[in-house]
Length: 470
Image (cartoon, rainbow, N blue to C red; front, side, top):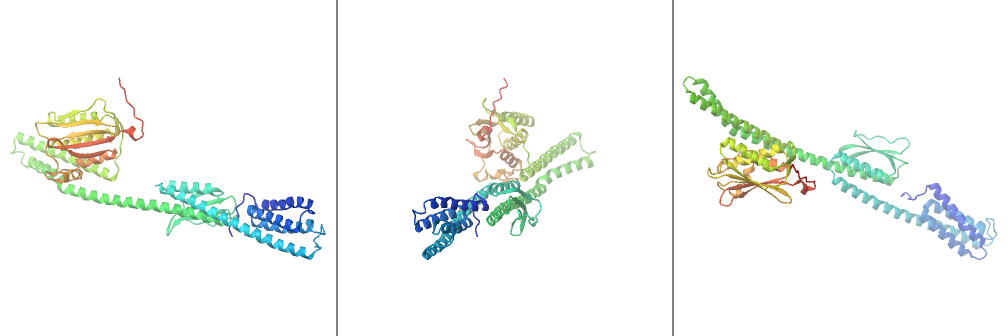
């Protein structure tokens, strides 16, 4: 049977029902000579109906029998005795008792059904909100905290604990503690211990089990997402391993072969070689060693990017300073000014990792310098709007075919001019790690223009600070 929902304890409800019968009988006793037997019956039926609606089944039964007694004892002649003078009045009394009992029971049952329907609807709303909350969470501790909050808020409990062991425990002797597995099918995620203020009702047990099932479904979703991520990580690792092996078989072998050949010639032919030839071979060994060092460094950087292990040390930075350092390094390498800088004075600062952005811009610049005509310079321009700061690297050499503009940033992409390598792929990974974008456009008049954008922090909700060093 559904549990009765009332703010009063059972004993209190019984006392209220008795008090109401006495309270109604008193004025009826005072005016008993003015009313008829039918009047008394209807008044007591109405009272039984009200008690059934308000207080439930047991109080309505007690009210029916007590009103039957008061009816007979105080209101029907002879007074103050259970004897009845007119046999027809005895029949009326018994009919009243039966009608009062039936009326009270039907009313109480309807009340219970309505209360049960309201309770189920309320539980459904709570479970829907709980499910919506779980769907927004992506960590186990958040699921456990949401489960505890839902239970302590909607059930009369004094303690709710998520146990670290996946074991079902028997309830204690007082029957106020429930142990429930948080499980789905064969998978067990833990145990739930809930201590109620009093022994839980059947509906409270069902609600508790529904909450545990919702939590188990959310935990299973997180577990499946983690499995997908692990699978993707394994696939990325396999792809990276393939790329590394590909690089080892092609790009690493070339400088190693040159270094080994030059060193072998120095060792076996040192007496036959002139000083100039020895210096040339030594220079070749140093150049190829530097090439090998850069290649290994790029491979390590690429592995960190693809594994998601790249740590950013962000600080307020002027991108014009990064571009200036890139231009200075290019001047040292080529012993001539190959880069022209064009930055407005009011270009805002951005938050980025200076070293990584220097590497990203340097990789792009080194690539475009290989195709820049000797009589012109690569241009690095700065601009900005309300949302982002833009770096534009303009090359005046050959144009990049449309189908290759995206693919040239893939590791070891083979283009029409040969292998691109890892530099552009690393630059793309670094820029995207800063929540920026990078793409290639055509340079008017011929050439390729690389565009890098970095978000302005204040556009994402952070406070932007203008640094006045004057």
